[in-house]
Image (cartoon, rainbow, N blue to C red; front, side, top):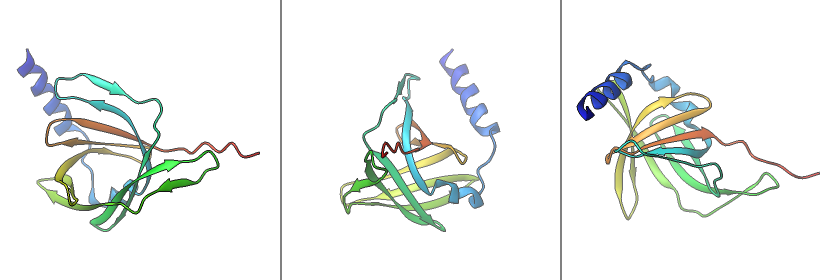
Length: 138
């Protein structure tokens, strides 16, 4: 049964719409994590996030940075940023990260103006939605 489910999942992913390199500009901006799907299929949903990811890409290079949104519409952050290098192979788009502590890769599964998802090397899928700031200034 597990093999059938895995086959169906792979078939669904492979039949999905291909992400074109020219769509990568859609990754630029502020994103908040909405859901994590673990390898065993269990899910964790995030309704509130204290940080968001800011992604900036120029061609196939860029960075990702953690940001803390404030109620006045601004952000607080550190100078730390994770460099991103995009690699395209066999019709798949990979996001490669290297920091002084770690190196990892995620495959981009879906991408639109409002959401994207990636899967890491451990088989965990992260789904993001575009962050919409809440401004409570009068």
